[in-house]
Image (cartoon, rainbow, N blue to C red; front, side):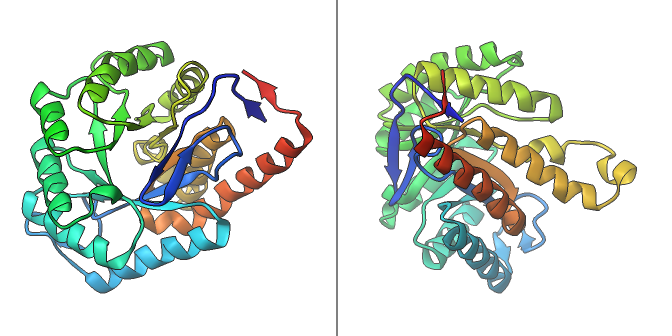
Length: 290
């Protein structure tokens, strides 16, 4: 439906292409694993988890990735250095696809980067994420470890509008580039239902001006929707999750952090439907130019 006049960048990370014009590349779908409260995790601090269930979930996501043609990645979430290393070891053996290193603590994230590099996985990792709150030592550590790929999260104190998201990106961008980050994925951030539309608008503005691959963690819109299940029934959670994850794809998102990996069986077919529709429209040359 959309075509940007600005040349759209395409990056290859661990064999997966991400970016470009809407419909040029299938949307990359990223499922979260080992997140806080994930039932397969036995002990968050030590990184104990049910390996059989974890492998089953990873294979399920890959199965739907193969069926739909949408590339898949994992968002590996850990709260301690010990857990991060265990999760990285497991993920590296369970799949050959790229993965995001994700922790609330940048020290743990950097420890994960260092460990991944030590075992030869530097080409498969994406640092998640850099924000307005990121300190100089975080950028310095990324430069030291020669990290190429990172998510820039346009979140910060007081950042609410789409214009503020674009402004935040422009503040972070020079620091990331100076740190040697050459493959930038822009997350225009979703924290609730109202912020979803702002994230989509910011994504349009960024792609139109800078041509960088954009997406968001749109599942957060449902995760923070208080009372949804009580008011509309348990079935509303899955249907709403599909809706919020598809919405940015309609507006040209290059990647989606779709939430719990368990939801892959719902999300992949829904996103694939939009991608297929775009592919046919591209053949007619009837896109709306921005």
